[in-house]
Image 1 (cartoon, each protein chain N blue to C red):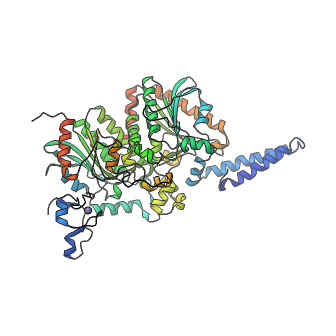
Image 2: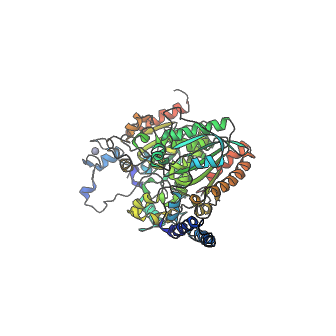
Image 3: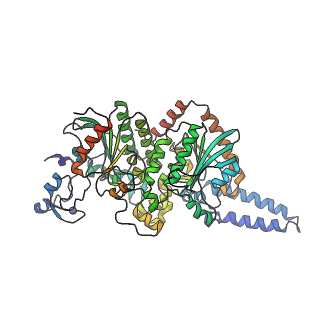
Length: 282
Length: 312
Ligand SMILES: [Zn+2]
């Protein structure tokens, strides 16, 4: 199999072979030939819906083949609060997330090449506890940012997250400050940082590194915002427009530079890095 | 207003008040008053020494708890409020300005909660919009330029979750503060006086020292919010409060905060002067220490302070 063989295992493995060949678009419900859909990086050919990519899939999308070297693969969740709710412990839940995704944290970091240009890359994975920002997540992003600063390599962080990881309490909240502090130094050092906001990027992640790009780039239709739609509706007691908190809406309000379809993402990022590093014109 | 767990105190206070009213005509009640007062203090001590996390949340949210304006009146002279973010407006949920603290000229910023309905509408219950965070950052830059140390008072249930706040970039405003506060080249002392509500608190909460009043709380999410998500039942907030480890002693143990400022017996809402005294003493100590550091050392330490939280 190709690039997608090392992503998340398909759920309906035991379904009849016929169904295995097909998948349904989450948005328009069209039946899609799975192989075609994967070739289009999980973008629906009918309605253009951009489904979530696993971290490994996105890395494959963005970097040149065989150029990716992962950092800190051994960093996994820690449980500073020894958190338990009525359904069990965070430690168990996290272990399930590891087993389900084959990851050890909600972000994969490393260095690689994009059309031959060296980059540092951090890619979040929504499948791992909703891409929540745990201390392991924060530490990996912090270290990747430090690496980018020291090696003077551009940094790209692809976010996909519901926000802070409440099972880690205040330690999770403080990862917002920690990652942002690392970005402050990167910024002072004059190193470019491109933030890629994918569906969804909300809460504590949008309120820290995801909104701090020199360039903020989003995928079409991605949910981008701070507070949840339901909380806002309850607070202001008014119905929100359908397009509220979509990437396009946030661009219109001035917080996103570009909304780029997935098929063009790699080439666009390449161009942006060329400008941000002021590379020699061919 | 009082809480269930404060009922015994409430009863004693009522009896003391009743006896005090009789004192003119019956001077002999004084012995009784003294006895009851002593008992009140002991009960206060006993109850407040074993507050659960959820009870602490209630104390931290007490409507009569000292608010920013009480601290301004009680600790500072010559407060000059400065308005506006130079961009959109002047948020009254976060206010700030110059002030004199003993022998220190300082800049203060902080969440402003109201004590009446009218005030709460004006201050939006201390829930700031982007312009509040942007005003705070503008003032922080002034403090940096004028070499004034900063004291930041935190007391908010969270950043305002509203349509307008989202449209004007609530996430971006908080994010920028987190980034830039880590590099503001002047001492910053952060004091959580009541509720430290998530990103809305942290948005003015990056500094060199993080202090908490003994009955304040600081949390990634409200106990109610956490309970409704993880327990699927907002009524489980007491359980969530316990699990989230949001009290000052728990946060000191986790090495998130630097110091707990003890409140007078029975909580800050019972003894405003006592709170001011304790806060003054602590702030003086920390300001003196921080002002003695070179800016490079100060910023290196600030960086390390956050870098080490959740280090592997
Ligand atoms: Zn579709």
